Image (tube, rainbow, N blue to C red; front, side, top):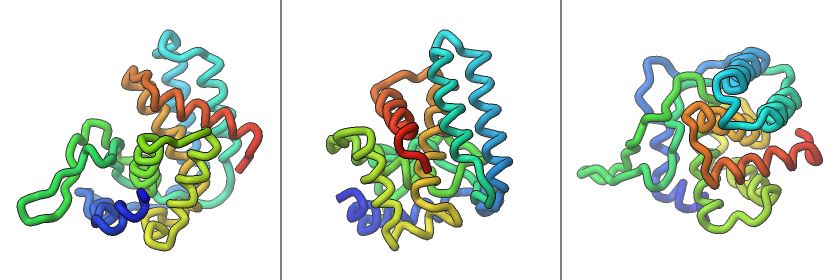
Length: 193
C-alpha cells in the first residue's frame, strides 16, 4: 500500500528535513482561509479563460465551508511531492527534487496528502469519494500523524485539494489530476466537513 511505501522507504522523513528558514508555525485558520480566498480571487480575475466562473465559485464555496476556529500549521511545501520526484542519493538517503511548485505558506500535511493522492490515483482511485476516504484513512495512520501538525486528516486533505487546484490554475495546468480533484470538490456538497 502507499502508506507502507511512504513509511518503510523513509519517504515520510524527507518531509521533516525540507530546507527552511523557519520551522512550521501556527496560523489562525481564518488567516489561512483569507490567503487561499485571495488566490482564488486572483485566478477569477486573471484567468477566466482557463476556468469557468462556476468552477472557481464552487471552490470558494468549498473553502467557505472549511472556515472555522483554530489554527493550521504552515510552512514550506514542495508542491509536487510524488514518487517520481524522489531519487536515492549516493549515501542511500532519499532526496526530493523538482521544486518549481514550492511555496512558503502551505498547510502542514500538504505534501503527504499530495504524495498519497498521486499514488492512489495511479493505482486506480475509483470514485472521488473513494479517493478522499483512502487518502484520509492513510493520513490518519499513527505513522503519518506527526506530518499533519495540529490539523485533522480530513481538514488537511480538503485544504490540500483547494490549494493544489489553485496552484495548478495559477500555472495554467489543466490535466486529468485537475479533473479528478474537481470531482472530489463536487462531492463535498453532499459530505460536509
